[in-house]
Image (cartoon, rainbow, N blue to C red; front, side):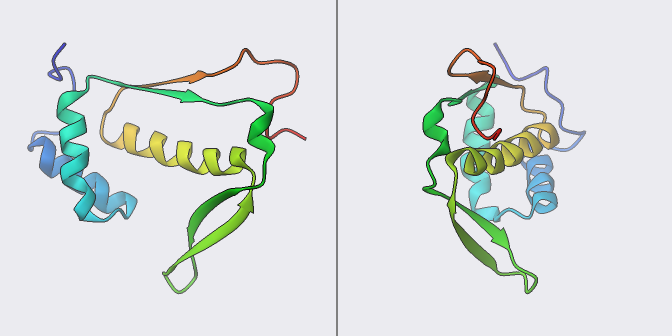
Length: 116
């Protein structure tokens, strides 16, 4: 299936993705890798681990400090780390018109990881 159903704008996909990168504050050095992926994939499928293992506190994220620098935040649950990653993936997918589906690894039970 081709990517013709996606229309980022009247400009080229590279230009439109470049604008998305600017809006998201991403380094332009990543653009070529995203373009390869964008052109080769019709959509993305993300499998989300919702097991109890996601409660382990060995996760890390980078957060922008008030001075604009990126600070590493440690000892997060894997679930918190995943939430940060999925938030980014959703923003990128919506701004760049990348169809994306999210699937849970396990059938949801009454209690999911991250809900205490």
